[in-house]
Image (tube, rainbow, N blue to C red; front, side, top):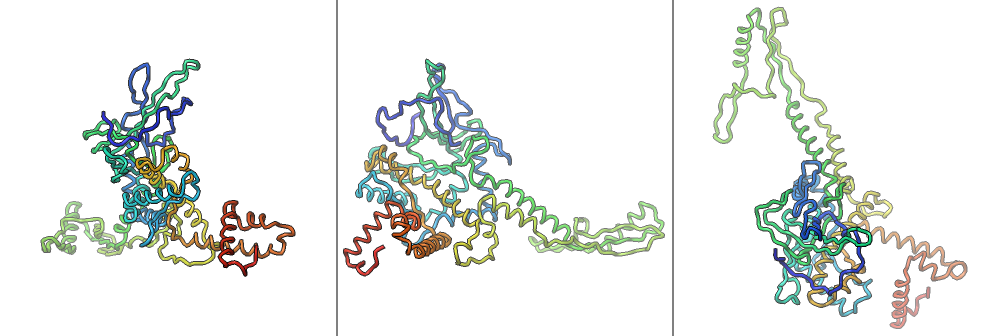
Length: 507
């Protein structure tokens, strides 16, 4: 099968000479097939293009798992929690993009290269349509637990870079890794000789056996951007989404709500009990007499909204109607009593419990479940512990999602010969992305930390030069790093040279 898409050419001998008997780490989204030299071909080790998993809820394939997550996202309580997470992760205004690249820690590139990288990153955001579609892209990644993009490149002129990005349905694509092994002559251990990765796309999707009716296309690994949630199931076989641990809570909440509706409909109305005196009539005659009395007194006129007709529907009886019971001679005669409806129908503590359990399973503060709770701007110490944990959880989500930008930007820079793949590997760890934040908690926290540091500085001012040095104060009280101290000193000297710091007291 011919491979589709671009392949970034790498230098010969780029592969490491160090050998290992352990294949590259599988994040759960890769299906590995091995090549045995003795067999002279590839042998499937768990399915070539499909992987069978058996999880709670009847999930059999990865596609079924994604479908289950999407169904869960439609539950109102789950949708509300997802919106809280997405809205907290992304923020934008009319002037700035939701995210910006940060190259302050990168020392491998010149200022000119950095400006080109920033320009290419802005182009990547335009290709993604991130300013307008950031919410949808981020939500799809969070719900599905994975996201795919096809990088469209003009193979005749790759220097133009990426021409377009098209999303791929996770249910229709699989990543495959071919692992070629060779037995070590000294130890007899199978060593990993070479690995090759690519993607298989089928417009009809894949089942658990790998059988499909659509057309399968083999796509180059460099032509696809693939980012997962990073979470694995308990068997370490498949990638799961952030909604996976909430699956049980969602099902319990839905079943409980359905049961509550059925109970209230059946027990809410009051019903009457008619005790009809049948005297000494035989059984058959007594039953006939009871039906005659029931028919004569029971009024069951129904209105057909489709036809506008009113008809007598006495022959049908449902569970909400009255009871008619015969009573023999010697009783209290004909009697009509009332059967009260269900009690405590307004209690929903069990519903609220499972709603809170659902929010906790998604790491969303339970306080956000109550829409009537107002937000008051106060001291950072008044922020709940749950909000602090939620803020850190959102930061981790942003970090994992940023791999989308890493992969696309890497391809763009290499194709346009702005940086080499070796230079990218050296600087990748120092590149970060700044997401816009509108959370008041971060602002309150930073302001209060600075306020406390300044107060401590004022209290220690009389001891500077006696018990503490200026350098110690700046490092341990103001928490300034060596680089920050050097930059601040340069700015102070620049202000003095400009005449702005003549009257200021030297610290």
